[in-house]
Amino acid sequence: MKVLIVDDHALVRDGLGHLLQALDDDTVAVIEAATASDALACAAATPDLDLALVDLNLPDRHGHELVAALVAQCPLLPTVVLSASEDPGDIEQVLAAGALGFVPKSSPTPILVQALRLVLAGGIYVPPALMRAAARAEAPSPHALTERQTAILRCLVDGHSNKAIARELGITEATVKAHVSAIFKALGVSNRTQAARAARELGIGD
Image (tube, rainbow, N blue to C red; front, side, top):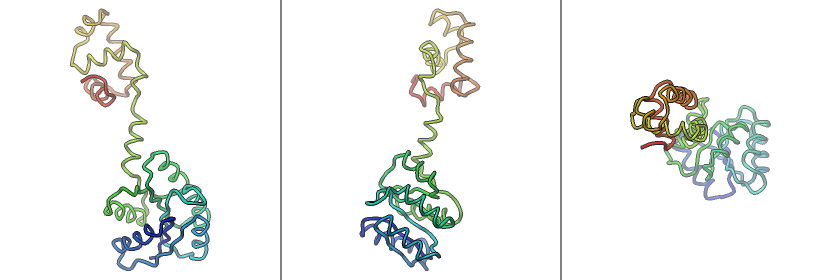
């Protein structure tokens, strides 16, 4: 197996070369590049590359730009970004550019090996940081609720009935019911238990 390692730190390139022995005992013809320009030249000179590991911050080009260039030049070459960044925006950017994985440098060695094996098997590795960020992005915002609805939601978290909520807030049960329906819709839930769970995730209630 032939692997292109692109990083401007020689120590990192050397360490990754040794680490890749855990991925494949027959690994590795390691080709090293310190810049994006060198990486593209190496890829052009080595058409039988099996994998490219690319750092995000390179002296002559941003990692996502190199990923896009590598994908355009070598569309069948699996490319994985290995970076100190854990910014979900960076992760989304390189995946959109065509990378098949993003592995934070803070990841334990077994995670890196697992991610590379997944990519080499035809999969895409998305780190937990991005999945958590995506889940937060999809979660409803408490600001989507009115002040009255937020107060009612707190009561739901406390397990109060519509009648108790109406009495506590000085409104009719019909008004409470209407607000509860609006809350369910805003939170994307269908019952009080789910609403209470969503509220806790948003930091509303106990």
